[in-house]
Length: 125
Image (cartoon, rainbow, N blue to C red; front, side, top):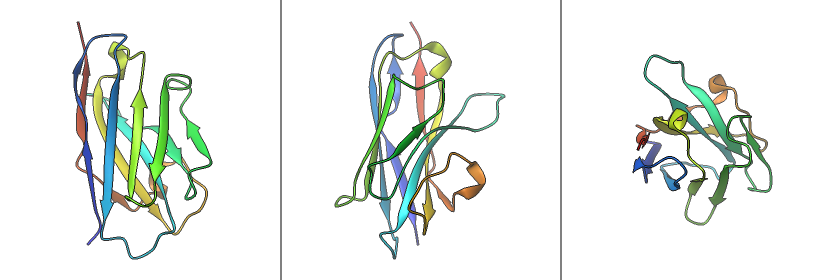
């Protein structure tokens, strides 16, 4: 079955950086897009970014533009989220997800078929 496993979360001070990874396994096609989402306590899950099948196109939430960079390695079936200049409001559980069969990505949560278990990111001094 399809599995997505995130890693790289942790505790970081405001202004610091973290790099999240998500490895996908069990996919029977190489046509899929990926997204990163996050959910803070008491809030709805929101989109952070997404990346096209080729990796040439990305899309970011306004709150993360200029600070976060999403990339993918199709050989390793892995996506990354480089997070710089972290703010306390970036604290959340971060999830990766895959939209199987798509070439262009969407930040709509309902488009995604499979989800990882999440990794905690805490930004605090």
